[in-house]
Image (tube, rainbow, N blue to C red; front, side):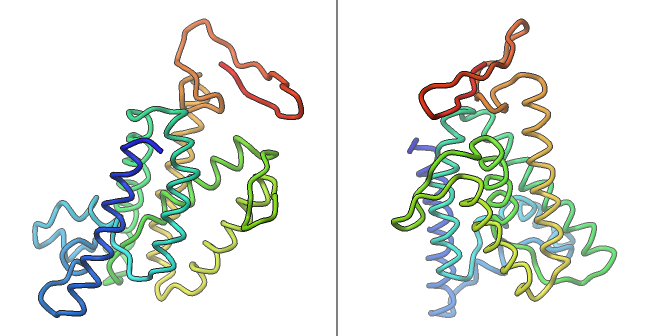
Length: 219
């Protein structure tokens, strides 16, 4: 994977380790300083509208999202490039944060927002749309991309059902929706956000090329 993905994962895992150490020692709390809420914004902690994404409290959640970022995120990063991928991340994270703040202002106070769920769910859905028939390995069993992503979405749905505050998760879902909309609009413009990941060009057209049993999209 590219260095950017490694740094992204390093920040995510590092925040989890710091938060775990802080809770164990009682010396500091990453959760209270970096999660998002209207109260945080009122205290002029403006950075929390973006900094909430790497905060996680559950080890299995960190492992799940880490693998997702490494495999699916790494492949889409290679297709889109760093600039486009950063745009996608910003849309998901800031969109989810702003959506949550609106809900917190209207229905709050709500529990603080944290975690990269908007990014994770958007990556799953975009990947399923781009590569529905690609075979991936779930443990030791080959699974087509669409079914693999359905399983991942099922896990995300379970986490939604088990979430203490459903309104919090609606903020994440708004970020997911905006991320998919960003990708779709990029695809419509023929940019690297499209299925092909090709370069943006005025006279380029999308075509489908069949290579063996694998369908590939080229710009």
